[in-house]
Amino acid sequence: MKSKIRHLIAAMALALPFSATALAAGEGAKLPKAPINIQDTESLQRGAQIFTNYCLSCHSASAMRYNRLTDIGLTEEQIKANLLPEGVKIGDQMNIAMNKKDAQAWFGATPPDLSLIARSRGADYLYGYLRGFYRDPSRPTGWNNAVFDKVGMPHIFWEWQGEQVLKTEKNAEGHEEHKLELIKAGTLTKLENGKANTVEFDKRMADLTNFLVYVGEPAQVKRQQIGYVVLMFLSLLLLPLAYFLKKEYWRDVH
Image (cartoon, rainbow, N blue to C red; front, side):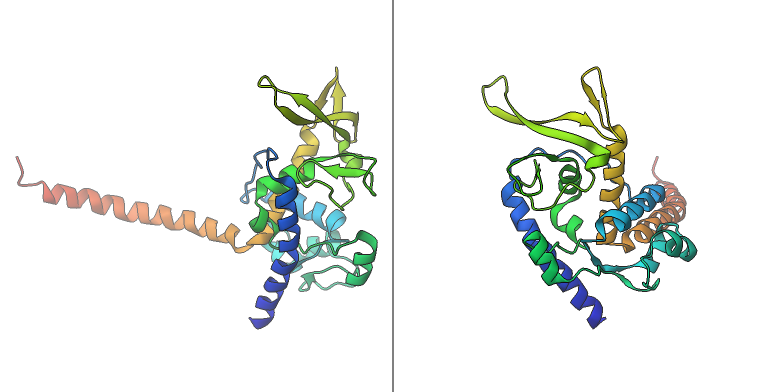
């Protein structure tokens, strides 16, 4: 228990600096509504695969263990075959092999642990952030983000999304508004008659966001399932009781 508490505190300590900076930089940004459904196990499984294949090289989720993924419908054999890094055991935490000092030197800051990032920043923020990268030659990585200005993270999904640019336009009231525009399609986006079709890419980012929401509280999947069963049981038990109690109470009232 003490070990678990220490890991949670460490995860929060890593997540909070990222969150505070993001809040200041992304203040006022319009956030899209994230299509979250933690009962969608297929979405959670796709999100887990994206996280382990793309995010886990830099970002840990130390409050999460690989064998806990059985909660989302995966078997231990599937986890070992598709999600488990070499040399890692099924009961291990989702930690990264990268040294913190190396991360500091390479990125300028240690990539935060993402165990509690969804609870800290919210699903809408994460969904908007993942879809909000655009080309910016002034940045060291060549990328910036509409939600987190001057972000240090490179756009790891650019091959999927393609390239966006940030355009400034004036609305009907004369106020400036920032708008992202896809100028080069990726493997999961299309440009059709000058219009961007990002449905497939958005689905992938929704799956990843969904998984990070699950990681923030893995027990909520079973907790909600049990809650539905309990409510159904109470309804079946109490409704007849309430009906007969009503009949008994009003029996002598004419």
